[in-house]
Structure formats: C-alpha cells, structure tokens
Amino acid sequence: MCGIVGVVSNAPVNQLIYDALLLLQHRGQDAAGIVTQLDRKFFMHKAKGMVRDVFRTRNMRGLPGNCGLGQVRYPTAGNAYSEEEAQPFYVNAPFGIVLVHNGNLTNAHALKAELFNTDHRHINTESDSEVLLNVLAHEIEKSTRGLPLSPMDVFAAVRNVHRRVKGSYAVIASIAGHGLLAFRDPFGIRPMCIGRAPGSVMLASESVALEGTMHTLERNLAPGEAVFVDLEGNVHSQQCADAPALNPCIFEYVYLARPDSVMDGISVYQARLNLGETLAKRVISTVPPQDIDVVIPIPESSRPSAMQLAQLLGLPYREGFVKNRYVGRTFIMPGHEVRKKSVRQKLNAIASEFKGRNVLLVDDSIVRGTTSKEIVQMARDAGARKVYMASAAPPVRFPNVYGIDMPTKDELVAHGRTVEQIRELIGCDALIYQDVEGMKRAIWAAASPAAGSPDTAISGFDASCFDGVYVTGDITSDDIQRLNEGRPGGQDPEGDNSRLALPNTEHA
Ligand SMILES: O=P(O)(O)OC[C@H]1O[C@H](OP(=O)(O)OP(=O)(O)O)[C@H](O)[C@@H]1O
Ligand SMILES: NC(=O)CC[C@H](N)C(=O)O
Ligand SMILES: [Mg+2]
Picture 1: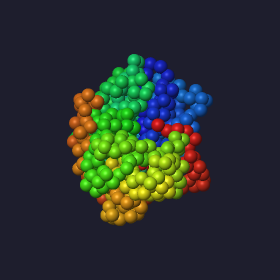
Picture 2 (picture 1 turned 180 degrees about the vertical axis):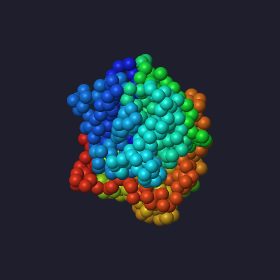
Picture 3 (picture 1 turned 90 degrees about the vertical axis):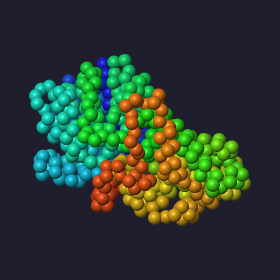
Picture 4 (picture 1 turned 60 degrees about the horizontal axis):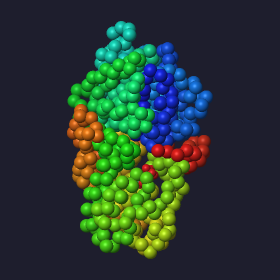
C-alpha cells in the first residue's frame, strides 16, 4: 500500500507532487521519489526516508516541468533498504517511461524469467515494480503503430499487461513527450482516483491527496480501466480488462487509508464508525457494559471505531494513550524489533485514566499482536484493574499477497490460535473480535452515492487476510512461499535502524 500520485498541469508540478506525497505519507514511510518531465527529458530524485527528509530545496529546483509523478514506498517485495528500489523506476525504451506502483505482483518471479528469456530485458533489482515497468514497456513497444504514440496504442498495451500480470497493481506511468498513463488491476484491489483543479489533472491513491492540493475528486478509476492524460491535459480513458470486477482491499478501510479519504464511493471515516457500532454489539455479548468503566482507543487509526462503540454502549470515551507524533506508523515499519520498540516510543499512558478502572481498549486490528501486547502491559503498569481488548477487524489469519507486508501465517498472532489462546498471549482479561461478515456489512453500509463516483459498483472485497479467499483466484502455497522469499528484510544491513525507530518528521 504505497502512495502514488501523478499530475499534468499548465504550471510546474514539483511542489504539487511534493504536497500530495506528504498527504499520502501514511501509506509509505521507507522511501520517496518524484519524476518530472520537460521537453522529453525526465528529472528524478528518489531516496530512502520520509518525504520531508528526501526532498531539500535543491532537489525540488531540479524537478522542472508541467507533468510528473511520485511515490511513497512501503516495501512488500524486494529489498527495503536499497535506494535503487525506491520508486519511480525508469526504462529508456520505448520513448522513455517512468513508473510508480502500489500493489504486489503474485507472478513477478515467472514474469522476470519470461522478460529475460523471451523479451531479452534486463531487470536490475528484486522489485516487482521494475518487472511491471518492463512488461508495460515491452507491450507499449509492440502496440505502437507510429508517432506520436496514440491513446489507443497505449490502451492496447495495457490490455496485454492485464493478460500477463497477476496480483494487485495501481500504476501511474509517465511517457516522455506524451503524458501520463494510469491504470488499475482488473479487480481494483488497490485504489486510484482522478480529480481536477483549474488547469490541472491529478491522479492519486486517495482523495485526501486531491483535496489537500485544491483538486476536486471527479471519480475513482474503474477496475481494469486505463486513463491517459496527454501533455495538454486532455483525458482519454478505456476499459482494458476482459472481466473487470471491483473488489477493493478491505484493509484500506480498516487501517491503511486516512479517515478523511473516500475510496470507491466509501467514506473511510464512516466505515470505521460503522465498524465500531457492530463491534459494540459483540462486546455486550462478552463483557456486560456495567463491568467497563471507560473506553480507550489505541491511537491513531482506531479512534472513530472506539468513539462510536463508546457512544453506543453509553460509556465514557477517554484518551488514555498519548501519541508521539514524531514516530510514524509502527505496523508498516520493517522488522519486528523496530516495531516493538516503536510502540513504546509512540504511545505513552496517562496513568490517571487507568488507575483502579476496568478499561476497554479498542484497536482497529490486531495483526502480529506487537501493539496489543505492549499496550495491555502498559495499561496494567498504569494501574488498570481489568484490561479488556476489542478489535474492530476480525482475526488476521491468512497472509496478504496484494501489497500488505504480512506474507507468512506464522507471524500472525491469530494464525492457528483460538481467541482464548490469543487473549492469553496478549495478556488481556477478555478479547473481543469483529466477525468477517459484520466487517463487510459495516464497510459496505458506508457507501454513499454522494461521497463517491456513480461508476462505482463494488462486487465484493478482497478480505483475504481475514477469510483466506484470494480474489485473483490463483494463489498456491508455492506462490506464498516464493513471495515470502522475496519480501523485504527485517534489519538494515548497515545496522542503521535509527531512522526507522524515530523518524524525525511527523506523518499524516
Ligand atoms: O498487531 P500489530 O502487528 O501490532 O498491528 C496492528 C497495529 O498497527 C497499526 O497501528 P500503527 O501504529 O501502524 O498506525 P496508527 O497510528 O495509524 O494506528 C494498527 O492500527 C494497530 O494498532
Ligand atoms: N506496498 C506497495 O504497494 C509496494 C509496491 C512494491 N511491491 C514494492 O515493494 O515496492
Ligand atoms: Mg494503530
């Protein structure tokens, strides 16, 4: 779940892209990059780190032109510590293409071999995104019927990309001298929307990037759809998939996206409120409300659910943990030790809110259990009498292969354990989970025609990490094994984990 953005404007776009990336920082904290184009030439700056660290004024000055794209990376394939795997990726032929990718390919391994053996293309990194760029480049080369490259040629290439590539991908590519191409995989697993401001067209992972840069959300891209924006800002689009069916990743609504975004017609904030409501009903059946003195959210993402849950149960809602705003999101940090240390650095308990009370802690999700285990102990240390824990999402029991770094069952606290065993491991007095159907219903109920695009018709959700159903339908245990082998490592080989533990910049 990286964050991606692309803009064509009648003015320089470097600052716009920077601002949009800052608004998408919560989707990736490991690396950032921008490419602009001017007179058929690309200008690129990318590096490891958060947006504010990566781009200095001198770097921004080196990014001229009215068309460009950018990415914030949360690595799910390849090497988390390699500067070369920061995006965008560049390939010189045909025309010169750069690409940013949000998602994860499930057949990158096979494609890489095919690219080498059949297409004679060299891939220089372990990143699946570089593989995707080379497939796209090869297909654009094949579809080009003359100069200049026409939108129809580009769409023909995307049609072939859909045939070859498997997994999840929301992509923006910049083609030198031509414009921007964006497309979503045939299941629309990862998000992408388009919006406008006077003289400017922007594509982005989340609507918050559009709104925060004064663009108006126009619509979400349909699954399988490709959009081509030429350098004059004219927008062309075509459905390029044979059987598109919108199945957005449900974890976007649970945790990944910002609450002020609207994705595929669903308000993330409303979805989280609804999750709190359905969770409240499950809490009552396990712990009577009169046994709970106070509801406390685990900042940041659980707040709307916790608030709604407290209101429904008629219980006080209090802030018992204060978040250090200079520590990023712990779940998307690579490496268990770093995550564990960061929970303590990130959250601190206000003892008076816990002392002698029975507290119900609410989190949006429990994945590896790192956060809950630390937090429950912190609540006890602060003097809580009873510590109950509720999760607005169901148990995460299955690996995710579509762009969230949870590739092995073994590291998921809920895998192979009953709720009682998880409760014991986390150390709380009661543990209440949402159920899968309740989660789907709650999120579905947050869809509003006014909030989204009329072309949005969700067929279902990718909820694979909760129910083990993979919407692309082709995931074997060998695939999972291979994806796991290709995942980002846990420790920085240079031994420098300080930036991970305490990034010196605030994230959204
Ligand atoms: O069970 P775990 O593996 O610990 O993962 C789950 C936790 O990680 C996330 O928080 P994070 O700190 O990443 O971000 P947030 O501030 O948006 O809640 C999520 O909101 C849970 O609190
Ligand atoms: N989370 C993502 O979208 C990751 C994109 C790509 N697979 C990478 O690892 O860089
Ligand atoms: Mg959290």
